[in-house]
Structure formats: C-alpha cells, structure tokens
Length: 259
Picture 1 (spheres, rainbow, N blue to C red):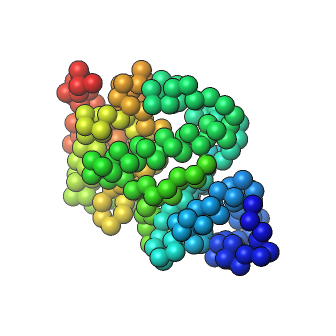
Picture 2 (spheres, helix red, strand yellow):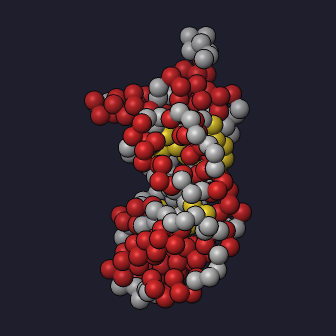
C-alpha cells in the first residue's frame, strides 16, 4: 500500500469527503467503507487516472454504497463500493447460481465480490452497447465499480419513487421503462431481476435504470420468474400514477418463446 505520509495526492483523495464527516453516523459510514483493502483498490484507480477525489456519499446499504467522485479531468463519476462480508456473499448467491457466464467461480468472499463487480460491469456494458438508459461503466477493480454519475454537484438525481411525476411524464416514463424490460430480454438477453421505482433514477428529465448487478441472462433457470416480478413491480407503481399499463400477462405472452 502506498505511503500516505509521503504522497500528498493520496491525502487529497478523501479530503473533500472528510470535510463532510461531522457526526457519529457520518464517521460510521466512512469507517465501514474505507478499509485498508478498499483504499488500496481506490489508490490503484487513482494511479490509473480514473479518480482524483471522493466527494460525498450518494447512497449506502447493506451490500454496498455509491460515492460521487471527480476524475483527473474534473468530470463527475460514481464509485460503487461493495462490502466484503459474509452477509453480502449470502445475499448474492441466489443470482450467481445458474448464470452460465460465471460457472465454476468459487472461492472466498472477496473473490466472489470481485466477480459480482465484474458481473455488473458486463451487464452495464451490454445495456450501453444497445443504447438502453443505464449509467455507462468506466472501470472495475476488486470490490469497486466506477461508472457515470447521475446528478449534479449538489447531489444525486432523485429516485423515481421520490420524483414528482406529472401525468405526461408518468405516461412517457412508463413507455421507456417497459421498452427497457422488453428490449433487455429480447435483444440484450438479460433480465434486470430487481426492477422497481427504487432502482430507477430521474436524470435530465428521463428515467435511468440502476443497480444492474443482479441481472441474469435470459437463459437463467429463474429468468422468467424474475421477468414477471420486474413487470409486476413496474406496472403496480405506474398504475398508481394513473397510467394505463400493459398487463404483465400480456407482455409475458408476447415474450413467450423468444429465448
């Protein structure tokens, strides 16, 4: 690990974020995510010119957190940090099993988390290559994933669940999200597997699908079940917003036999 005492730029890496750490809860989040192994990975991304500073947390949860960063060119990006822990490993296991892209990958928790980061990176790459609305991936290393930042210098873009939709926006956003689900399955060959108003952000007036790590291939043994769940969640939310939705069964019938 680089010597922090002798490298001023390493000290500056976390300086913007440290200035925001005021209370006990802020310190707890800081300590939970920036352990020695994670810092080593962050420094490597820094040496590669990808990250210059870590500015503030965007969101934190049991499995990981997302932090707004700035690149060497002064551009914003998001850094997702997965926790390396037993509980995280257990939560991810159901999605790992049955994914032919990662057959035979076993090992300790850190190796599994590294594979999970690779999985989300690959999923985002595939979505981006088809022009679907997701944050573009930038780099991955260990338990870290760097990607496009959705938001402003003041804070992240709002989640769909918190966004004050007009009726026209609700109708338009529903068509975009439904198109994402259908094209993801028929063209990209993926199912998001955890899609809801909690995993959609509204950036520059349009919805972006996030948290794509749980996405499975359309050939996954549980793919149709996950597809149905995604459709049901999305339809329930938009129906409550006054949208005339296409029934889950109708979409499932349309997609029958596609894969």
